[in-house]
Length: 576
Image 1: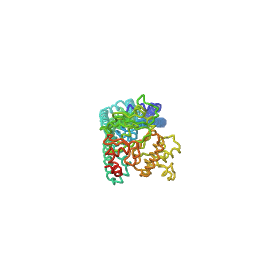
Image 2: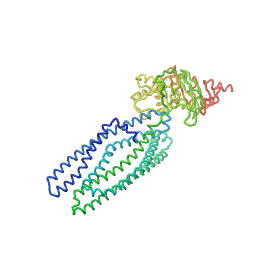
Image 3: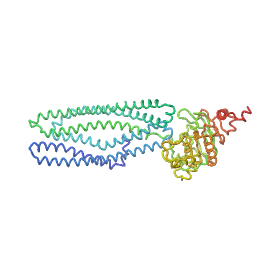
Image 4: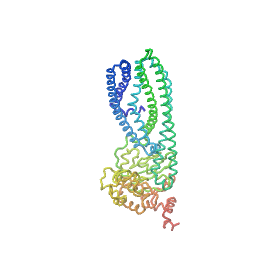
């Protein structure tokens, strides 16, 4: 938890004032039993009503001062803790935003959601408790013990035999709690992942009638977190009664020993009441310590998980001398590029895309088409070889400068809650409404957008749930076009669009993308017939390269793809 302390530096005033006000509250609380002793021994015993009233008034004043101290402590502790949590959550979020695709693949969305929410909340709550209870507990413990000895050393000594079993119990709690709560948080990761996958793919679940299967998956994850939580909570449940048993035994011993000695004059009734109150406060604070230690153990598990995110090495970072300004013409070259997440996906791929060319990429599923285009904007870094733009290695260009000249419509059209206008303008936040409409027309989205009652101000649900797949893809393409990129990447981004609309998009792109280099990943061969260059991938290798007319004669794989979709071309059939 120590690595988190710097997050409190900005709020050191609140973090300092809160404990000081808690000291005021504790001091007032420690005075109350002595006042009670005075009322009993000097007021009630001798029938001094005036002393009873005066002392009672003093107790009321002390109680009010203590209440003000407690309220003030809570106010400042809440401000410090919640600002601490806000800053920590912001840093974790910013760190996640810097992650490469590989980092995101390794940690997983479900885990990151848990760490941003539940884990940060656990740590934040412990900071809040720490600024209040962590200050109060030792003050009450030692203050009550000292006051008990000042009141009656003989009675106070009766509490000493209970210290060893309390120490053993607390040691047991600390040792057991941390691994238990680590498992609870891991189980919560799994539960969040299952929920997220189910909600994101709910249409597929219903389409394939897999509700029962998903219920079983959720049930398993839910049962695991339930079992882990029960184990952790049982530790808390056992600790409380054991501590209360020790407290009650101690109180009973004092009453038995002290009560039998009152008549002999060894102790007064007021002393017994005061000592019992002090020891009750002291042992109750020990109970608070046990609860605090359990919370600390859980927070430590959460802190470790947060630290894992903050300490994750981002595998794609700008080096010191990376170009911060870059104005490319659009010549893209792959030079003996090999790439893989373990096993190579792309193997020794080399080709050149000249400025303004349209390069289509074909291949069977798993041949590496998407991986190839993801390397251009450095979503991943090559394993071997290099990729250059205008002769400059992409690793020598800052990510911001590189990606500012690349427009990309990903394989999955991801939209955000907000208006259609806002979603398109994510490609260029400075774009005006006219630029939005031009991009939408080029993507063949303007027609369906204007049919909505609110047109471009239509609110989209989460992930664009109120649009069809083809409509989402067209908005995604518009978002890529609005930034007027030097390099455009369309990663199978028209797969949900009908052929007629796809042809219209291609016709619009011919004018819009003049002088710009385009990469088109496609499953439909009709999409790539007019490309300046077609790359054919097979099992990670670039097996053919050329135009449609050259490949239909020279590449068996290309010809097989063509024939499977469009039939045997006449000029080939006639020569066979």
